[in-house]
Length: 70
Ligand SMILES: [Zn+2]
Image (cartoon, rainbow, N blue to C red; front, top):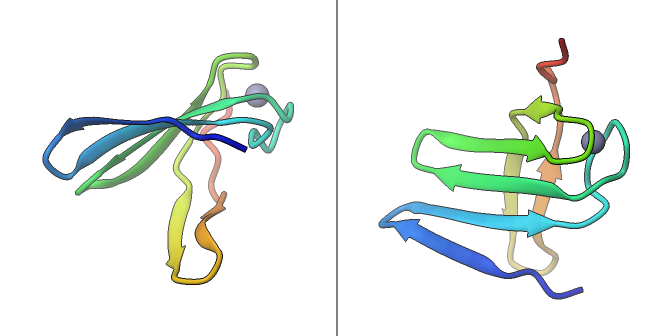
């Protein structure tokens, strides 16, 4: 899996994570900033606030809680 990370500014980056939407398994647009992470699914339009856990061995893990579903 290749993930392209776009650095927006210092401390803020965006990346697309395929098959990561907890609702529809679609691709998530993920924005990571000093305030935390936000995710947006272009397929089902679910906005989430995943918790990021950075692991030296397994990379970045996403944990979804409190999904902002309408
Ligand atoms: Zn989705």
